[in-house]
Image (cartoon, rainbow, N blue to C red):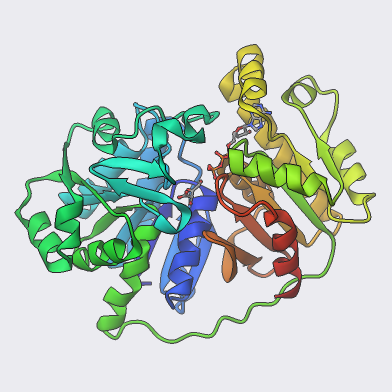
Length: 413
Ligand SMILES: Nc1ncnc2c1ncn2[C@@H]1O[C@H](COP(=O)(O)OP(=O)(O)OP(=O)(O)O)[C@@H](O)[C@H]1O
Ligand SMILES: O=C(O)[C@@H](O)C(=O)CO
């Protein structure tokens, strides 16, 4: 294994696995830290954790353990993947996890670059944009767990770390990889926010970081990394033997992002859909078994969703508590997925990082092989050793008809 990635959620992990696979690396996504060694053919291993919103100490401990496993597999470089919208609170976890990984690896200049221009996330003068809006003006200001109320990455990261936070601005990034490499070499110990508004910027930053032991960012930053290994003759050309599954399918959506709510609304016009509320789950007026029975009785792939508008989410959080509502809903989706897989469902689409993590963990999935891209940042995946294909959609990703399109790719491609 050449490159080791630690993803702070499961959809983000499949996002970067998709990027690396498209750039020609042989990639496997692991669910949690594997107990065994990786297959020798794996060139990039992505360890998916569910650490984005757990307490800082736990996120740090799990990330360090994941890094140690990846180093044992021979990785030359570690990439800490977080969200392209920098999802975190003022307390962490991005800063503290980066500090701990830097200490482990002996790295003291670390790029912090969540930019993902393909999905409309760009960084300019240290500020993160979603399309033409500042992050703090975008739907992310209402995120159920990590409301992003400040677009200045330097300031937000500054709350989370004792390290100095540096910045390489657009004009320097435009000057290319040698210049970026020199600026990094000349800087003192720091986490360095790098502007990036297009893929060439990300390629140049990636090239400039060829000798760095640790990088951090969104999947966009990974675009230039396979070439660093390819130039050293370390990447083998591998074929990607993907095949889909034609059996029963289900869509599970716990994401409350604007994009997902639009996708839910669209799917409701053409397929069976059932909303489950936080109150029904928490007060036990419905159950995973009941919803599974409804799902299995549908002629077309059913959508089960808790996705709701911000005012509904806030009302549930005020009544039951933010953590309690999130964990009850996540555990509901986990039980539901388990029940449906036991009943023969072979295509599962999930929306939302936390939701996807809960589902993959409940299904006891060890590893997933990366197949064709369904939408930017979302690959079709095959669960290793099982007749099960899966797509984990990040909350903000995908076009309006994503669910219908994903069902087709998982079946036919
Ligand atoms: N109706 C609801 N009321 C309260 N909380 C909800 C409701 N529906 C979902 N949630 C919770 O909101 C959180 C949504 O986070 P999730 O990571 O799944 O989606 P996302 O943030 O849109 O996706 P991503 O992390 O990929 O951007 C989950 O913890 C989920 O359980
Ligand atoms: O970077 C992104 O936006 C996604 O891969 C993600 O992490 C969402 O959970």
